Length: 443
Image (cartoon, rainbow, N blue to C red; front, side, top):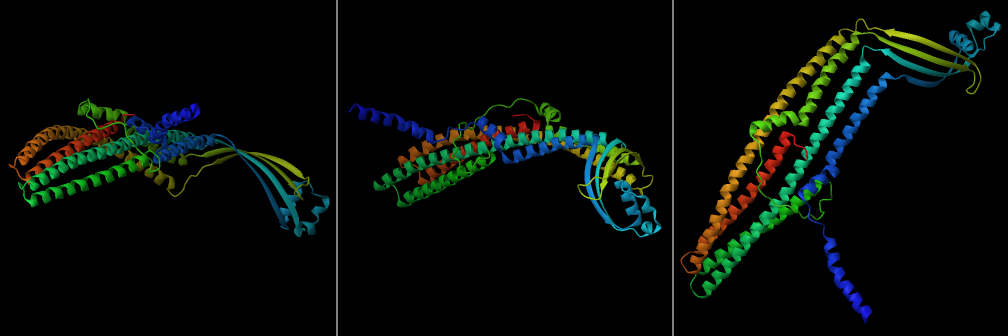
């Protein structure tokens, strides 16, 4: 009996723990942002682009190093010059090969040539150095692009998170309206049973209840959609259960418009990235100008020739320096320089426009924040007034001094005020996140 009692007690204690473990813990806004910054798929894509830019620096640095090539070439020919040279290279030339008939009409010969060639750049107009600087600038720009993508992902997460919270507020408002409307329907039916109310008044109350129930259905669907959107941003399956821990609330945001705009010009990574791009296009002009200068390279070469693939033959080495200078290319280089300068100027204009755009984004988010705060104040007062109005009219209806339509109008006005207040609170929190994004604040 003691064993059975112990098992029963264990089951009683364990079942609540298991049921609690089945549901995920509430998700805070901070946790949501951290999750998105690790698992968001577009952000992961940006991370791979950053890795590509890092590899690009290595590619540019390789231009300073020598290039080594190994080749094996097979030739069979009865061309007199080819046969003569191949025999010499193979170390197989005989005195009899000087016979006129053999020189003019030699027998075909096989030649296997194994070659190792090393090319060391010495001077190529500065292409290697400029290419390396451009790769470094491209990497810095990519870092800024990645940082901006992190900020945008955080903003999208905040927006989606508060979208779930707003949907929850809409559900709460709809349920409050449903509860008050059900009371009104019950009261109307009681008054109708007492002969104090027309049946049309009862039907009107029931129609309003159906409207409220429809509003609740839409709010619940909106919440399901908002949760799927949040999961998608977090890089999770869209049907992952979501319960949020934070609720919409007001917190003042410090700073004047002018100071916030100053922060944007100083801190926004996309502006820094664009500045790197402008510098890069300037290097592009210098890169185009290198074609006016000569190329000088040192070449070392080792050759081994034989009749058979694995045979023994003659070997040789060659060292040479090569200078190439294109003195006229049909004005190709001139036009490439013009093109590069135009690209540099275009990038400079885009940088100026981007700065103006950043200032505008700060201004818009700041204005949206102020507007949402004013709406919150107005709708907060409207909720208080609407609640009191509904109480008074409901009492008058119970005393036979008001119509059902009066109660419905008061209830609708209160529901609208509650909905508007929730929307204004949501807009305020989203505008705050947009303002943080606009000034380049890191998460």
